[in-house]
Image 1 (cartoon, rainbow, N blue to C red):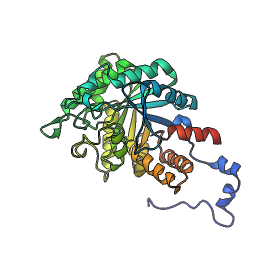
Image 2: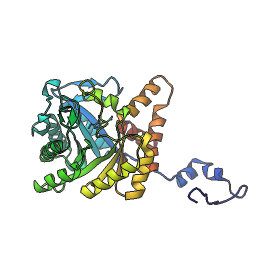
Image 3: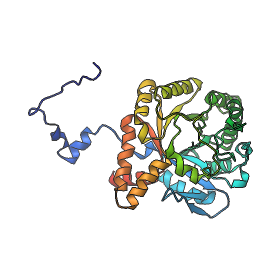
Image 4: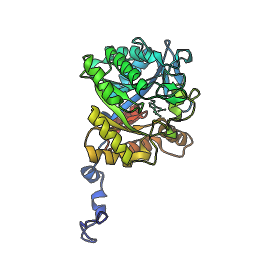
Length: 338
Ligand code: PBG
């Protein structure tokens, strides 16, 4: 029976508390580890210069202009964080129904990629979302035609978008749009253009979640979005479907896969990791960040401890790393506490 439990010992000869008695034994038997190398930092940025705007629904998170972003990224590098994920917040007048700014080689993302790679080179990986929502006046990740998000025409634009990002020096393209077939199409487009070294981190199991609310405030897509994203993002009720999405993405050339959101989907992370054994990343999303901050601001939770405990939970579930707005905070804590 799958539920049977092997008996490893019996009280009083066996006393599990003995191994918990002192800090040093607890360290000896701890099963999961969390370090700065497990953290990826998502950052928001805007046009102009010398400006930093707080994101109201994400206390402690800012939208920086590129010149202000660089010192913040310097701190991430110094703390041992291996990569950042770049999210542009465009001025509203740059957004169009055809999301054409997504494929402009001199757009805000490409300029940020160049600035970060020029400054930090090999010491930091740069991840770019492949999806149209920051550029699309409809707020959707794909093109809207007659009220529907169309698949194959979107995929063509996503390939162009991935190419301009790769040309700018992006190390990892992260398709977050959930269109069918996009991973294979982007892989082929990159290979044909001589970018075989650009890695793909696919948002393979991305759910239609209420936890993305603060992110949409941060990149300015909340007001634009008409309807929801349920025709492309997954139903929170499903896990078999997540395995199928991941399996397809691996076949299409994904080097790493992602499960998103994070804490409510730990079971999905565990199944993906045990089924496929590929690098699996979790995205601890904006709503998860906001919840902890809100409770901590009221003195209801100890943010330092909750942040580390939640991140450790992802490691326990099998995640190789976590995209988290808490990356700097957590890395500083890990440095202080060894
Ligand atoms: C959009 C995208 C979203 C996030 C990352 N990329 C939002 C969405 O799908 O609406 C969410 C991240 C977060 O909530 O922190 N392609």
